[in-house]
Length: 320
Ligand code: F6P
Image (cartoon, rainbow, N blue to C red; front, side, top):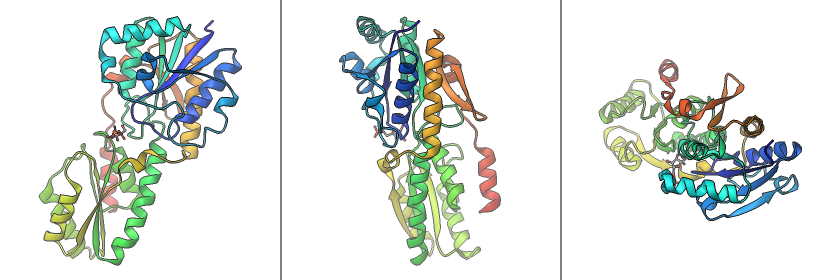
């Protein structure tokens, strides 16, 4: 039976990571397994930046956003020699297995470490909801609620001033934050990598909502990295009666106390990760599918096609 496991958070942080660290620590220690926290993701692993975790050291962290372990991105972890070095460090510290919390880059690192003899289990921690092997990632719900609160406020002021608010949200080439926020806020236009971007079509739609549907304001939600939100807002000002204003929500979306949904999700997933490691399995990742917590091998997870949101775009079209 395993005696010592490690836990790290890697990539962009997300609200709920702390709840996962707490669940992993408490689930493991209850079963007689020691837990070592690794600071700053794979980077901290290579620097042997470790801290022992106990039931009491993880108390009170569940309500906090961010990650108590810190996070980093380490592109060098793609290099086989670097992974080999990391596995040797873990062996030196008698850390037999690892839970890695992050996005698909983190999963790739977990898979590589497993192939070097250290069983790893990945938890989906990212606000982007861009992991195909889970219906929801830890942090998505909190980020979505942050986005919605901001848009509700923008709606108040844009309706007072006959304005069109262009709101750029994060997503790392996944449109889930945009489409879910668009449905939750009744946005007029939602632009994501999946439904594509046609500037003329967007400008025509805004004119249509103003002139034909007599809307007093409009909200456009656009995923990051598609076009410049400021430029689009200026074009809206020139081609319609609305004055366009751009708001880039940025990193505010990554912070804040996690919602109940994210806390429960992280807690269930953290506990499952320990169960999987104690079964002697590695190269697995945890997901939620149809409200069941499942474990899938990482290779399969990484080859799954992106989730289609066509049905949500159709629903938006019917209701807008
Ligand atoms: O993956 C999370 C995320 O916030 C993405 O939505 C965004 O594209 C990226 O990270 C931003 O990264 P950074 O914090 O390194 O600027």
